[in-house]
Length: 364
Image (cartoon, one colour):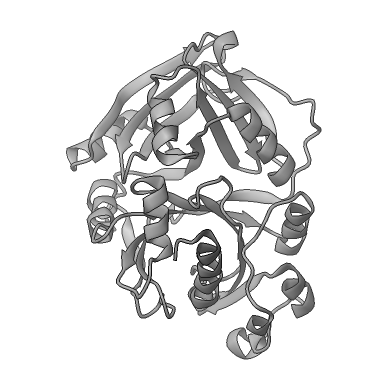
């Protein structure tokens, strides 16, 4: 077996550039049950930005806002709205990860550097990927602080109330016309990922819109990146709508795993999170489509949770509406009962639900 030249232990953190980090932080605490753990800003010696790090299970989200109008963060938010800037990957050796990927053609963003404070040191390096998104390699083996050097521990007055979110299952990127294969090749060649699945416009089309998708995964399967591009349809696809409003390629959604999707989703609904709605007839022939499942259908129907099966088991999934004003980034909540796939059987119902929302926005 070929040696994995880029061993990745998991997702280290996901950083959003947002218009108002303080208020976004409150949203993720109340609606998604994240706990505020660390902060960086003027009080900690950072002059141009503020960042809040939130955690639940193994998921770390960083919300960053600029303090100055001429900052690259301000430019990012002006162009894209609130969106993902950094998909950070947890590695043993950030310097080697950088050397291996740049020698294979990755465009450098940040050369390896060591960040230090009284809690130890962290080595980071970054490369560019699709759009203005970057991958940051993080080696934190010699660090025991709250997050990264430059951050201080911070707690919220708001008591933490987690909702069972465990880890990042996968992150999906939307790229422009004809760019999907270019980026699939990037992950294969530059990062040593392999192609896991391919969906073409026959798999993923409705009366109006179509898209193509390929899923790449790293050696141990901890990191999975589906990449979507638009395909020709009668009307504008959701990928085109995303690209129009995001002004380019970017992260479309983040899928988060839970062990009890019914409990997680009912809690999110209570807290005001809005989900896409599929019609009741989706549930009429559910058993014929997916066979026997452990759950009662009624609670799934009440919560509008979708079910799909593959050769290895089944999965339960649901998608939020976009979590900012532009119809760009959203979340998927997923519970896997053996299934390794991505809910192909739900694509049609799901995309019709997205199209109903697009139509309301006048963007179909």
